[in-house]
Length: 120
View 1 (cartoon, rainbow, N blue to C red):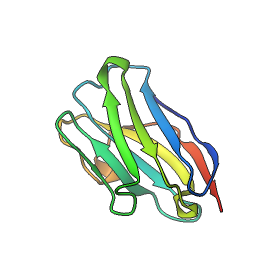
View 2 (cartoon, rainbow, N blue to C red):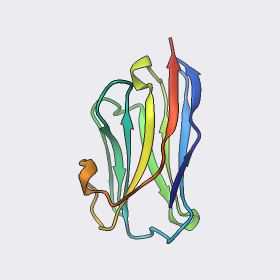
View 3 (cartoon, helix red, strand yellow):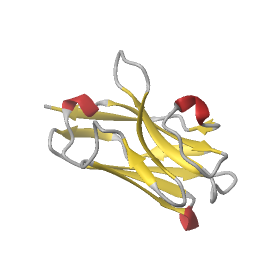
View 4 (tube, rainbow, N blue to C red):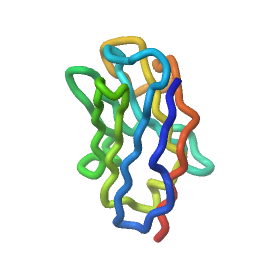
């Protein structure tokens, strides 16, 4: 149901914008999130958004911004000032609830992921 796009290779200090589109049922009321899995590490929370608010992980705060456009059934992750440690596969996820969570196990459906590589 979810398909991420916008990943790629970027130099440190650069920017990327990830998109996540829902090709199935609209997620107008669902909380949505971005997670990432750095190479050789566990999946980690990046950002989440509901209809009433959003939050980002401390490690990306002031560099990453999450947004949503319900009319387009999409969420986005604007990533600025990228660092080598941001290299990871990025996943979007949806939760059939109005409130977001920072725990991956609370999300009900996932995309396949998109690779982001930051070169130093």
